[in-house]
Amino acid sequence: MLLADDQNLVRAAFALLVASAPDMEVVGEAGTGRQAVELARAERADLVVMDIRMPDLDGIEATRLIAADEDLAGVRVLVLTTYDTDDNIVAALRAGASGFLVKDTKPAELLDAIRTVTAGDALLSPGPTARLIERFLRSPSAPVAGGGGPDCLSDRERQVLTLVARGLNNTEIADSLGLSPLTAKTHVSRIMGKLGARDRAQLVIVGYESGLVTPGVR
Image (cartoon, rainbow, N blue to C red; front, side, top):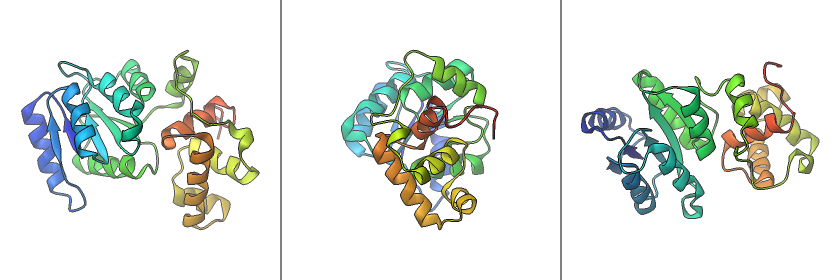
């Protein structure tokens, strides 16, 4: 993964934390948003842990450039910041971030979040609430998936999409629908392909935008 933060001490602390996990490796560090984009292109890391407030190019714009680059389709961005305002969360999602955490997150939770976003397995918790999703979907520049809408899905796929939009992971979806975890994962992959979705975060947006899921209704 890449670590992008303008503070050397913060990057060093994150690097030590990541080094403590046997399944993770830091392949580069960036002190500016532009360096983060350049390193993402050079290293093709699975994940960029991105600060928002950086010199030269802020983390939101850097995230936007990474998400828009077809050559970096497999690179995900986890925004990690001190500034957990609604505007920042909405801006990060709009730019294409797959997760959003604040810097006071516990170390173990951060490692779990990194694994979650890298796997594309679920939205993070805490993450966008129903209120923020509603606001996000009202924004005129809110991104949508590049393919068709839920009408192109089978009945089973629509059920799976609804559960994804409610925040369930593959195991929980499998338990809910009486499927094997592998079958649930296959359904999610097919849905992403049909809808042209980059990751599960975009599937959540489609679920709410299409009316399959209503904020506050389970």
